[in-house]
Image (cartoon, rainbow, N blue to C red; front, side, top):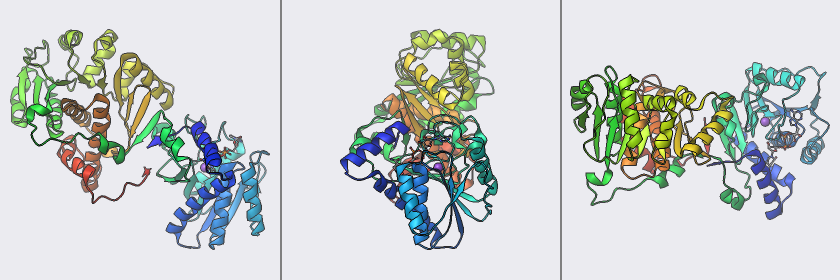
Length: 512
Ligand SMILES: NC(=O)C1=CN([C@@H]2O[C@H](COP(=O)(O)OP(=O)(O)OC[C@H]3O[C@@H](n4cnc5c(N)ncnc54)[C@H](O)[C@@H]3O)[C@@H](O)[C@H]2O)[C@H](O)CC1
Ligand SMILES: [K+]
């Protein structure tokens, strides 16, 4: 699902008006009808008090038009026009007139107004600012927004939470509506998915207003929200006459005394996602553990007893996943550096593997093309230096990924795969998968996909999705707290099944 910028949405708007020969006001009516239907299906005519806070632009116009529909169906509406500017939009004014024609008189709020009382059991429709927000709300509007937030009432935002930009972090985080639900017009906005701004969006859903399909189809976006329908086509079906050699040979390289479990998890994940053969490359001390914990895997031990110190792989692997539990002993750093200097095998690099790259950035030049890096926040900082905010972080990661031709998996509540100037935002996963060893499972998953011949970018996007989905399946049965890295591995198969299950409900274009 594409994530369009505000400029692209405005362009789609214009083209739709031209190509479908409809007025902008008719387009607003489509939005209002969609909003109304959503509310009406849920409220079914209840007498709850509905406060509509409407700005004076088109977001406000959507709100005013919605108020008319609600009124016509007997709802108890209270319309407040947030009069933050003299520049009222044409379609806002048309809808205001229509409202007045029906004898609904909004109250007009300005700097001097007393704020309306909002009871906890009321409903607030927030249509103050939409994607046209281009500066911080004035003091009194910020005060009104704080008033809405502190009311405790269920708040439904039209298009975006008012005060939230689609592509940057607001300066005053108190002047942003904390939405319970956002009904977003046509497509979700980038700010919904980043931690600093996504906190204002509890849940969201799309209202489809039928913007020009050709434009939406043909226009490239910097970001995409990856859902099941994007993932299924990436799957490579297994052929009947395939054998284990057809699915490659993964090497999982890592481990040190006390951290052999990391390799166990990666190795198991690589097997579970379908790697043909998996060899764990570990220091001597892990030999018994690996052979016992993962009988399906082969083991090659390093000369080092409790950490890796001289890498010799006696065969040609398809792919190597490295770094999990590796440690940063001087001998290990030396061994990995020496190995990376010469290596030509495709790589997935995690944890201490990334830390070593950060210490010796010269090694980045030696990585095979499209190496996948899976840093957590701290590791990413070591690679990139600091960033100003979440948007800057993505910009810097894109530049880094371009410079070194690597795929960066930025892990988070919505993990984002960055490559070639584009970001692929994952839709699966939950707070339960933020657990010890979860990253090791992810690295093993991506390694196992590369081993089977998935192109690197597909492996990253597909693997991140399956990993999150496996965690979602586990959490749906046991709750967030009980999700462990091992239970994510055990659900990889179920995640595949869910991907292809025809029993599942049709995918709804929404998220939380
Ligand atoms: N194609 C679509 O997606 C459609 C979207 N609709 C809705 O229209 C809004 C966008 O409307 P727009 O009039 O462009 O902007 P806003 O209503 O968000 O803002 C109004 C106006 O206010 C000015 N402004 C910006 N920031 C401030 C500020 N801090 N203080 C005061 N004034 C400010 C600025 O000039 C803005 O233009 C979209 O979100 C949808 O809800 C259509 O209804 C249907 C088609
Ligand atoms: K809004």
